[in-house]
Image (cartoon, rainbow, N blue to C red; front, side, top):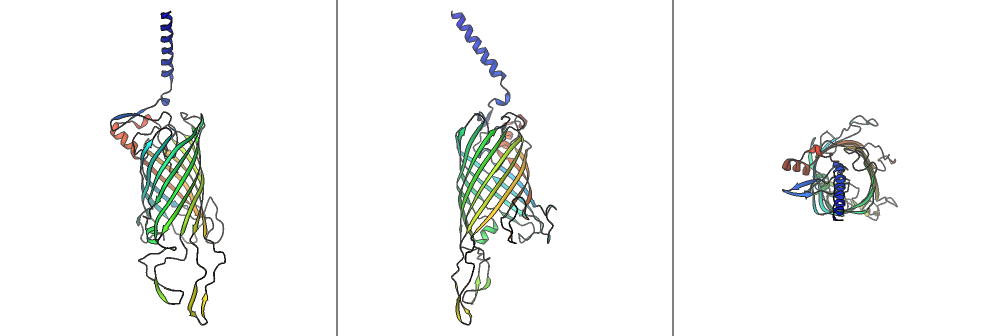
Length: 395
């Protein structure tokens, strides 16, 4: 009896061993080293808002993983000879160098808490009218955020996730923002994502599809209701007809509040190729313009009230369309090439502009470099050919 029991146990052990050995290598959980300590990566890597890897890429275990350096080149379509002809030629080509650092405070299979930033410098390389000097460099508006990402529901073939950035701070570090009187942008962002398996995470072609919707809100703190620059000394007439020195840059008021409502789709054509398309509507609400200002001293009959529009529009809308193809060249390097059109919904001529094309449309190319993957490869000698290259998105 004991012999039969031992035989059954031995047979069961052999069956388990054969089954374990028969599993494909891509399904095994790899290990990575963090400061010399071996750690186990997640058993089933998938896309998430705070962990934007391709389906077959294993993340590092570093607390600052997903930190990227990027080099972006963009030019208007008309600069490259695409689109309607110029009334007067005004080419525009922009170069941006940036860093997107991330630091994870807590992370497990259910949720992640981290802080992130987007820091950059930009230069308009052509002789456009947007800068004083050709090739002038300026910082972009730096963005700092806290981030919470969680898995709301997970099924066999799909998963629903949420990503909330709060607080979201936008600093007026660009020359245009600082010189016009902006102080701080304070807001939040929510992103809901549905990750749907198609061919499967281990499939080389069409492994999965990511669908998402997002909403953002920002309140802008400013020095005044209109753009001003303390260094500007321009002579203007006040309501009493007197010549005064004014620092006001223009007549349009600031947008005190703005929002973004959008949708996106990212199809992984291959483990190393992702095609992403997004559409946004971006309304903004400006400070109201006073209509009851009296003007004295410039008319013979005394004072008069300035006339204006009975129902002035204080809301403007921008629309955005973007599509790009990202190719992962290695574990650490990705190249994204695409097209975007961010423009006012109503043009200067009063006509509604197309969502797909306008004079503001651009072509762009972005080179992303994952600093955590470079560090892991340099310090621990991990081969980049052992895994599928990573894909990087900044949703």
